[in-house]
Image (tube, rainbow, N blue to C red; front, side, top):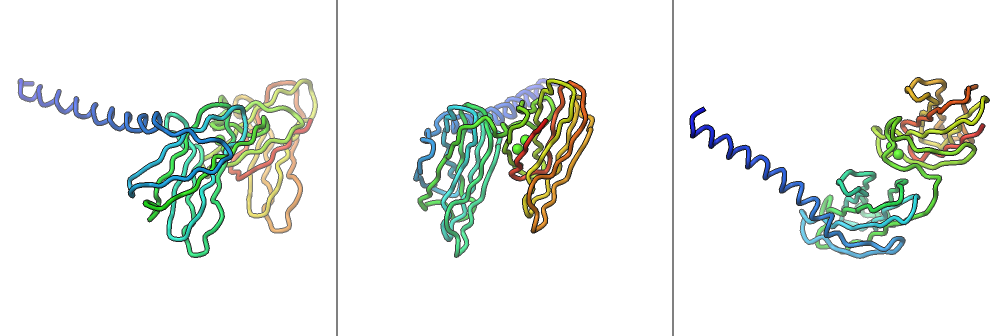
Length: 252
Ligand SMILES: [Ca+2]
Ligand SMILES: [Ca+2]
């Protein structure tokens, strides 16, 4: 490589690194300068232009369920998301701006104690107009805690208790694990709901499925879909997939 090409290569490499560093810094700067929201209180704000993004910090004092509500308004479409300090999105939401839009668009996610962020953007024609948002919080150990998308990050849960969770999208999977204290039957119950079809399975720590179940989502559905497995004392993992607000009841 002659001197000219060697210099050109180094220059290109430096530009490449700087571009990435700037992009990364922009996200971190936005998150670092985020305004802290008081939980369960309405906050008002305004986006200055179509590229403006408002970041808020939410300090969650214990395990529980965090919700984001954005007030809907005719002629404005906002996008909101709940994210962590790395910018990874747990849940997001688009408001309705149609003529009959009213009330709040709400999304929620189960999270462990910690610090999280909310981002508000204009999806369409939402800049220059005041918005109203609320970060809600309900303390509970019986919500799922994202991210729990594989066997190693499964949420530990207790037998004979009901847990609530939700699926962000079709790629979300929720894994739970439970320690069985003695030999016996273990069952998995998933509450059924009209218009939602959930798949659940009971697996071992290698991911091998013992039993699985599909809920009924038809119009007149009620009660729980239940499956059970006779099992020896061992750590087993419950996997729930393709869910929207499932309610899980584990009984032994
Ligand atoms: Ca989930
Ligand atoms: Ca999940």
